[in-house]
Image 1: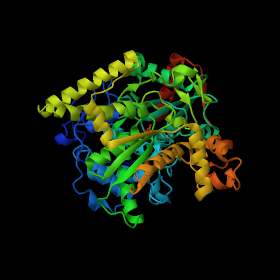
Image 2: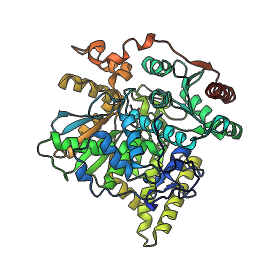
Image 3: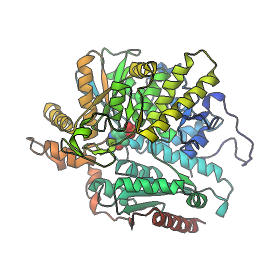
Length: 549
Ligand SMILES: *Cc1c(COP(=O)(O)O)cnc(C)c1O
């Protein structure tokens, strides 16, 4: 069993000491002074906020990391956020090495030159062919490490057991399942809308036969699945019976793991672009939904990485693009196309709640949960101009964020934010909105131009990068590629079916996917009822525990 515990081997309950630089607080200001472990295991703060480090560490020696392998670089970056008193360095190295040993590419996240000043950061070489593996492989091993440590010397009913419950429209579910399969003391339940996830994604999830993995196919939509998960987390009975854990992108450990590839890509750029040297500035372009991926870039930048701009690329679910253009954060624009055209706009289906179904479904969101973390740092920076002490600044930031989020809940939006807050957001970020037809055109263009097949999410990024390049052509652009095209076969076929020389089976499909759909599956059909799902979860966890004890 991995995860040997140092420093606490006798199971003593002596408090670990923490250096003050690695404590965590909630964006809404109520929860303060948590350890990394508490922040990761709790997931969401009790005041409804998200956990952030008390301050962003400066990486004073980041230039010396230039030639490190991806796992060794990860060790350096993560060490600045996790005190060795909490996780000894050798243990952290073990967790990281296990997490990235599952990646197929020797560089873990290779950088590919597309043309001129445009580079693509391929983040899809993990077990499920999506960028979420980078974070979820790490989170799975981290959960395991914490549980092994808590359970040392404990047997039977004394053992801590974590029950992870999540809803998915495809990507998160498969990455979470591959991150947690076979992990001791963890059960994972992933709800997906029956018959409404892509065939490849459904096969990826349901062909994992580990005893601790449970796929539940809900008769309903993705929103129904999410509502069931929320109801389970909110139900005191379920919470008492099961120790629920979350793997969605609000978990701080996911953001943390993603900081690493910004540094890695930057160093790769210094090696592949002749006239790009350490210290020169690059732009990063990020296909964005819940704002987790690009937030990691913001942390990298604040740690010292020379970044000219981070470019937010949204699809037609463009709440973030509208924030950067107007300073207002609103679920529905006051005079947007929806207000005139009803539910059907440009052939894009809109749900009643306003989320549009696009060709890049992993970015189909109404609000971005991790944006709250950026808001805190913007509010904190603004508070600091008042010249009070740091404690006051933090309190102010928490109050400001609470007020904004309350307005979002009660009136569907807030803003415009103070001019200075909007200005600091614009200092570090730009934004672009990319439509479905522009996404299709971009997939076509790159297939014809350089014989490269982009997945629709990555195409949103590349389309945004092209616009950014037209403004800033001398700066190298690194556009993040978040999924392998075979995961989104429908959109790729739609774009390329009539292009000469296109052959999905031979050009796109990885060997790992061949035959996947005919493999043995395990999945339980469930009604659209959170009580029924709760019963099933409890029963299966009981059975699993019986098997172990
Ligand atoms: C999750 C996901 C995104 C969006 O990432 P966020 O961190 O939510 O902004 C983009 N592309 C793909 C393929 C994804 O799975």
